[in-house]
Amino acid sequence: MTKIYIDPGHNYSGGDTGAVGYGLKEQDITVYVGNKLKALLIQNGIDVKMSRNTIYDVIGNGSLNSSLSTRASNANSWGADLFISIHCNAANSKAYGTETYAYRSGTNAYRFAECVQKHLIAETGRTNRGVKTANFAVITRTNMPAILVETAFIDNYGDNQYLASEAGQNALALGIAKGVCEYLGIELTNTESEDNLMSKEYDELNGRITDIQKENNRQNEVINAIGKDIQYLGGVVNTAVYNYIDDNMPDWAKPTIQKLVNKGYLKGDEEGKLGLTTDLMRVLVINDRAGIYGE
Image (cartoon, rainbow, N blue to C red; front, side):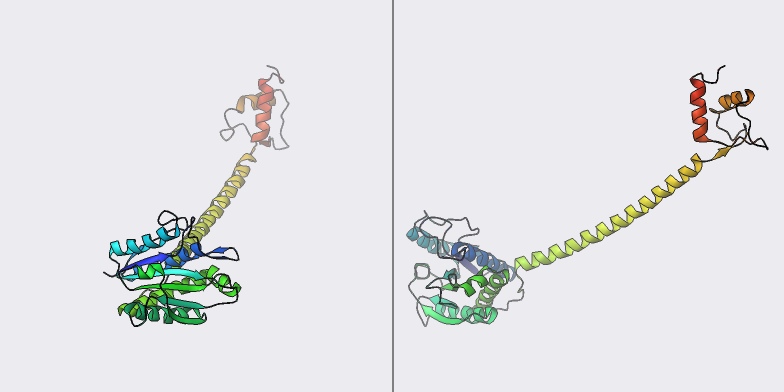
């Protein structure tokens, strides 16, 4: 399995913190792009290790020389096949575009840089500043083909906004990944970043949750309707009328009602119907127990 060492440039603190522009920090953007690139490469069967996995990581003892030498030595110790250092450029706020560096021309590293630069421009549409050579420490102290990518100028407003955007970071990662695969002679079969895949999974999960909520709402509506029916039926029962002292009248009410009939307090209508509701009988029974109607 091919082993690729991704180096998000600079540190969270110390002597190697990188460039800044319009509130963005180079050391943060490089980690964001690096993690997206890592996800793409892993999904395509490539073994990946990163020098920094979070924006808070500090490589070495904090000094510039320690930071640079540690990155190279870690890649060498791991036995990486390729090395990619990710950076953001800075100049005079007027410069813009993307460029990729190798140590020397006519080398495997230079050919690797050409592949990456080509796909970076194709994916991002940024200004092509070409492939260049330089003696940057991380690409001269490594044993494998090593490149340094200057993604865009963090102090140029247009480039800065691109670097800050999710779409820009995704395109940068995809361009580098396609360049890696071309250099290796393999096909990049999965071109979705981990963020996009997680976003799709979230949307699917959110859709299922919405369906469950709709079903719960429907069931609640049914339950509420049943409750209203029960209340209505309860009202019908509570308003039942008892006309005679017979088996239909509740036993607890009969003694009081019989007493009131005997005393002439209850006489009924022309047909002798008492017309007593349950609630009225409860009141009569309570009064009777209070001694209001006598013995």
